[in-house]
Length: 617
Image (cartoon, rainbow, N blue to C red):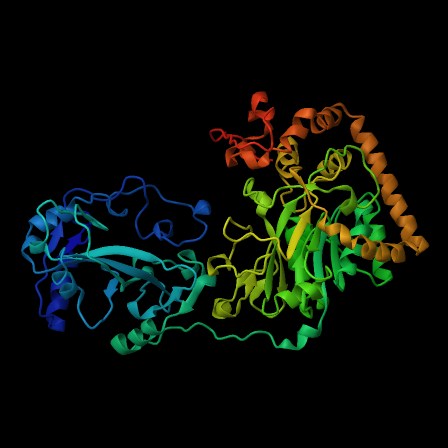
């Protein structure tokens, strides 16, 4: 029994062609075609074939979606299953509900026999969505094109098979389940849903992320055996030869007006075992460029002008794309993309990369979860080391705000991914997904569902035992004025205002674990400052930073902003993050009442608000 949902008169040839095809192929079965004078689709969705209706389609928030069309939108009138039951299906030995783009898999027992032989007369059918790697004919996709499934998404589609005479009269037939009857079991892999037939699109990537697709041997065999198909196969690739594993450990970063903080950051990361740093800068006015050019001449870094304007990209994204072409990146053994306010804090062994790698010898990716370090109520800029000044931070268990558990990734340069990314490499080569050995900061494996696009840890994946990324996002209140004036290298259109300070300034507890590396850092820093030109460049940046602070504090708007940053209210809020729900951080500090701010940080309480309709900064 086939439900023909076409608008009356729209496809009169369908029944005729169906009947002719049945005769031509000698099909020994009866086919009943049902039609409707009323549209049966949902009123809130576009035509079903549109990629927006494809369950795994990426970028739905950016799609140009046509208006709803109930003649062609996904089925919304589920009562049609009761109508079909009354039209004769109630007398059948067994009934399976699948779609015209579904094919039942072959097994020892048919799903009809399985349903008849159960106590309830009902089994659940769990299908898997499948896809072509590439369509040979975009206008006419075929079953034989589909040879792929998603390695990180089971893509379950639920249907049922029922023996009508064995179930209660109270049973109600619906789209994905039978009401008032508990199934006796389920058959996983009962069918495949050939998704490009339901959602034909010019490109497979419009209905599924191609970085998730891997070949399925059952589908390949079926394509060749049933249809004599020759589908386009997934290209085979191998890991990059290990010759480059003798290369360096490389940091890629972008900066703007970070002069006072460069030397400490560079000295620290040299002390823990990084070999090379490539820095992209733009529009600097505090001597950052001069410092980096000097450091390049001395062999400490590679400095590049950021080509973001020519590339039409945000500065950080332009830097990462450009860095991919650099020889020191291409030949690197390990790569990470971190900012000058982020310090890799290795907590095992002697605090070096060698110690970390010794603890996770099989890992080729290490997620370093942020630990947000606040200003610790330090208001005035001081040139002493950041990692020494700021010791107050978020608790380890701080799932909100969502930025608190963002991570950066240290990864082996072996060709698992196609390009660099802000938080992790991007563009997974799905053929190599089984070669990914990604661990968290405690050395625990991360699930495959994170491989393609995750950028933050969760309650099940965060870890700080071996390594964490100390994130000094605010530093002193005075330095934050300069940071706000400078703008961001990624979200260039977002102001770093009071809401940003509220989210990132976390002073709940003390963590001095990085302090043991101060002697090694100072040793490297002293080597740098022994060079009189480097010392002079550093002094110049310090002077520019102080001058900029004075200029900004002389402005009424920034003076008022500084007063808010250093207020007792904001200092109290920096102790309470673990008590707030996500909507508090999305809404801003103004939504927290004074009586809540007065609560004890160490007490057991929780506060949240309704989602506010505000623009995030």
